[in-house]
Image (cartoon, rainbow, N blue to C red; front, side, top):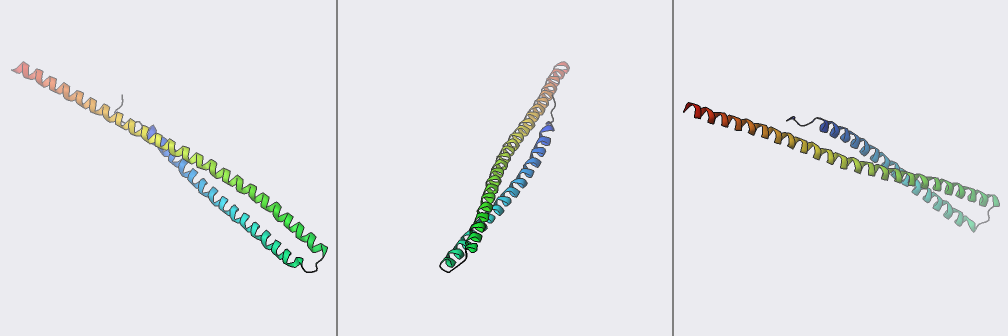
Length: 151
């Protein structure tokens, strides 16, 4: 059995570390995308609110049916846009959560690999210590026997 720790653990730790770094980058990008979409959703809500308040202030004045139809069409378009942005927000939040789970899994895997690497190093050190102790024991026995033969 080898007294050197196996190199496979360090390779696996390096690969998992690279995967974790990539997952962290993807998570950061997903978070930024989610925040942008939430800002867009808020902007649409503000537009709808502003447009409604403008329309209500003009309601008391004489206006044409065409103005009311334009108002309704515009509000319908904003509501359609708001629904689409909400679906995008939901999809982005789901994606971010999936990436968070992947990242947690990679962190657990990295911890497990680090423990296995440490255990393997300890096992190799124990074997080295045992081999060294056996050599010392053999040397002691040989010295004892040599002392008996000469004395």
